[in-house]
Image (cartoon, rainbow, N blue to C red; front, side, top):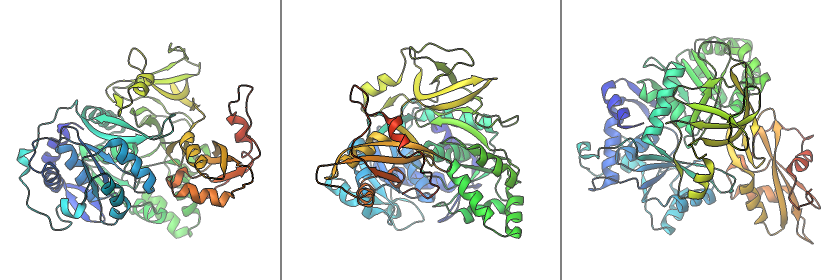
Amino acid sequence: MSPTLFEQARSQGGSTAIVAPEGSFGFDDLVAASGRVAAALLAGRRDMEEERVCFLVPPGWAYVSVQWGVWRAGGVAVPMAVSHPPAELEHVLDDARPVAVVAHPDLAERVSGAAAARGLAVRSTEELVPGLGPRDEVRPPDDLPQLDAARACMMLYTSGTTGRPKGVVITHANVEAQVRSLSEAWGWSSDDRILLHLPLHHVHGIVNILTCALWNGATCEILPTFDPRVVWDRLGSGDLNLYMAVPTVYRRLIETWEAEGAATRARWSAGARTCRLMVSGSAALPVPTLERWEEITGHRLLERYGMTEIGMALSNPLHGPRRPGFVGQPLPGVEVRLADEADRTVSAGTPGHIQVRGPTVFGRYWERPDETAAAFTNDGWFRTGDQAVLEDGAYRILGRSSVDILKTGGEKISALEIEDVLRAHQGVLDCAVVGVPDVLWGDRVCAAVVPRAGMRPSAEELRAFAKERLAPYKVPKDISVVEELPRNPMGKVTKPAVRELFAADESDGDPA
């Protein structure tokens, strides 16, 4: 998303860009609104010069206007997760060190105290975004800075092996390369209309859906939250021709469809069949889910592979066979290889570590030079930490290289971060967090806890403690209090043995 995005938006004029709870808005509305937001953030300055702006805004018109406004002001947009508790929001504020915080009025209380403690005022979307409330006059957008594609425009937080979420710095050129690649591979056009209900602090919702739609002059219809019946009604209307979600969502949609009467099921299925493409990503898609969705809608979901640091790297074809369990081939403009532990390329049929190179790949973690250096090979390949094998010309994902990185419901999380939180409880001596394979969620987050002498906190008490400090999807679903953790001769916890403690206890409930 270089300045080219703004130029293309201007060329679309009044055609519909966003349909959201606040109303329907054209591309000209978006250009005007984001210009006013940018000017207000600049407050007389000529350029924000890559200063960070954190914003806590639910999906909708205000979100897009603020995001584009930060970009056009020359700032770095740092979207904060609306589902996160105060402790995680505070971490982002401390790490990103923003010069401004923007919040929707309904969410302002969640961040206002933390912002004030750090000397930051919280600006309301009603103040900044045209059409949402009164605001002071600001200078016209003609004075906005000229932007170079190499400049940073966005910072998304992702968990890593260090435990705490770290900022992935993404440039305008990175986003433009990602959007161009997906536009070519998935056949985007101005005739497309896509539904968006995914969280907008991840690359999946921000780039794959929202920015791809706006880049191509398509319409993005935004729902503030996921409701399976509302989604089915929109799919069943026949108004949409693109849909993208995570495996957990598809499983919920299948369950909702199966619970309805014959007439409703027929209407929903008929409308869904009119879509030209449906995509699944952010976690492995269980084969039963793929097959059942195809029975219901006639669509074989297109699986792809990517992550925050690289955007999308691999994809099944738009036209052509899509094999269950495979994620296809490299996307346009993306280099992918499988390598051994010494970063040497392995031959087809041999499992290896996925490494990616090209203009879609980020350049650095925010203020973490050592972790940045460790993430790249000497010749510029990014080490994803995932393993795959190339079979008959397509990649099959084998799993994550580290047992400490879990994926649940499409969310990538760090077991080490959760362990740090649980160990902060006065009754916990030690603990180990693992992911147990789960049909619905991918990894079910489970924790084995060793209590302190004379204490024995209950699972309910520990979950309540964690809920106050972690995002809902990070809170362990299952907690087992044990006398000791299994360890190897060197004293290191053997997590495969910990996983066996929970493997027999399968669960399909909602995550905490």
